[in-house]
Amino acid sequence: MSGVVGLVGRLAKQASALACSREHEREADRIGIQLMGRSGHDPREAAKARGNPLDELKANPDSDPTRNSVLFATHPRSDERRTSLETLTAGSTGETFEAEYKAQLAPFRFDLLDDELKRGRFNETLALLDRLVAREPGSAELLHFRGEARRQRANPGDAELALADLEAAPRTGQAPAVSHRSLGHLHKSMNQPGAAGDAWRVYLERAPQAPDAALIRQSLEELKP
Amino acid sequence: MNRRLALALVALVTGLIAGCAQLSHVATGEVTLRDRMVVKVDKAWNQFERGLGDNTLTWTQDGISVDALRFYVGIKDGELIAPTPPEPKGQRPLAFKKQMQTSDVVALFEGLYSRGGSTFTLDRLAPETFVGQPGFRFEFSSIRKTDDVRLRGIGWGALRNGELFPITYTAPRLAFYPQHLASATAIAASARLRQ
Image (tube, chains in turn green, blue):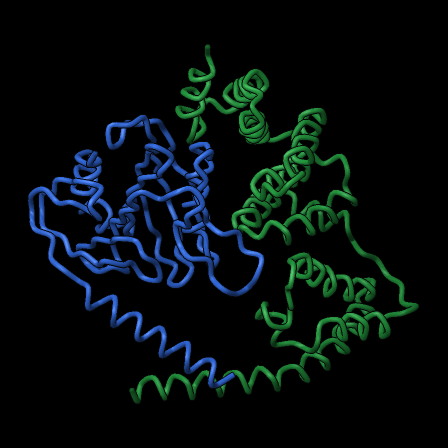
């Protein structure tokens, strides 16, 4: 029992330290904005970097980010902080270096989005992807993940929206092979065996050694009358 | 805050003690699981009536946090394969639906093993007869977030009359996984359902 009391004490001490850190974070914001400006970066991006994940968390019904996220619970109130950052950076200018950032991120983005999908928090993921697709509407990769997120969430109306994205992705000529697999699964669930078979065949042509190739081949066999 | 933490810790300790109290020995021979599934056991295992944090019948050789052979006996339409954590909100409940395709069922286990930031890589998914039904086998790798241990896993599953019957086996990929894989595979191959 004394071990439990000791553990509770240590956790309480840690919680107290985290509360103190909120003041430190405000100070860090001010210093960070100054450093961004001096290095030529646009300080206004700081408010976006704060606001975007906040908007994702708010996409969940009844979600309170200050209670549900370690990040936001240990920092100043989120909306207040975003407003404070916007005030501090109003009228600033600078470079976003967006093209350089995208180029550096490109080799890892598919895996990062795949991990994002595996979190199983589709409302948050869709808030993220809606924002990314708005900035990059022709990206097959983003269309695939948004379609797959909607397919897996399966709320009313999601199937039709997923279908639109998963059909749009191949039209770019850049769709990942798994996008055809997702399209096949979606058609199957919508009782469209012919279209499901077409999509799965493309998947197997493009990824004959895929880990699930044997199962997809059997699924194709099962579609035969 | 302190009170909530203390209550959570008490609940955790109580749960662990309760779980440990239900540890029993599984002798070799034929074993009936939850009155529904029958398997043949070639070497002795240790059985927990409930796994850590869920209601899944779990066997182990070296400890439940090391290797785990888990039996999901007759998951019904809408039933969860694991409880949904209360916070943060927005996490998909891992609920089985009888109209699910095999890939959706495997995605449930992917969701389970990915929880908390662990990785999940599907290494193989293929059709395989299980409990006398057309079923599937999947193999995967995972890096457990809590301790960075690299795990390997294998699972078998099939649907019968709208109910799902999977067995999964996971263990650290070095030493533990290969040590008990043959026994786990033999148990899965022997599994049958009572009428």
